[in-house]
Image (cartoon, rainbow, N blue to C red; front, top):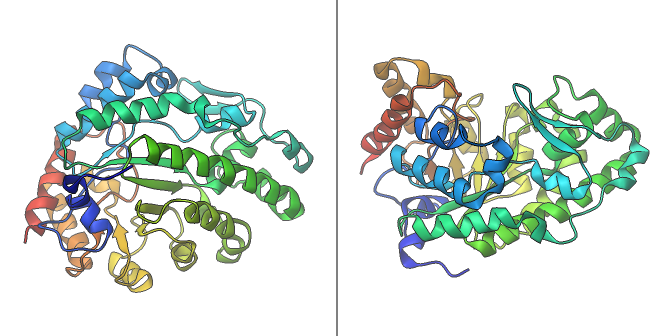
Length: 348
């Protein structure tokens, strides 16, 4: 996909390449979500999964969120888990409980039933949404695609949903490394096809979410996860910025950085200045305001926003974001105020 000069020189893309920008770009994880009345107007008429699978609706909520917040990038409205359906998993979104997999992998020998995605066209609704969004986005606003990282998806497939301690996942991982490798390789193969198809459909950058890898020790991450994350990252064209986001454990950051990605996404549990020391100055950093800061009064929010910006010490290559997604009961005015603050406080 050739990139227009407007997109190439957009605030977000320049920051992803560690080039100087007129101010720090900002986007917000889960920027199209239940806290936004514009989102709820669409969501109230359909189920979550039907919203994800209807390109016109997914495009609408992506575009309106970008517009009402005034952020520097749109992120595709989709979910991490539907890619597991064509791999053989029975996925359901249960009201009040979130995603549930009804046929999780109970033991290592079941991994044989997991099939890599044969034809990525089964996820065509995602690519159709990307095309619709790209048509209607302002010329200088990039669209971000995304996927779950192999470990996070493997955990869902094994636990069947959320988990506090990942007992089943780690048991399979520790007891049968060959089965674990087979599962992770199938996920990498499928995710690589998926992200590359998103790029071909028209996204300008992609993020991988390792939302659950924080449960691991550094040595376990290095042994059981990093090689597969790295394989996935290496399969993405180098001209497409990739944000490697991991949450929950700052001790994993050196190994996360080694896994790759032009942009390293960090959560709020690490000081951004310390993160910058680990990452270096030749790669961009994304983050890392604690999302709960948005509940504070605006003076406190302003002070906390300035602290994050100051921690970057003026290095080119900072994309401002929360350390995780916006909470559903957030006042949207606070999110809009944050975006304005980032732009104003960082203006050159």
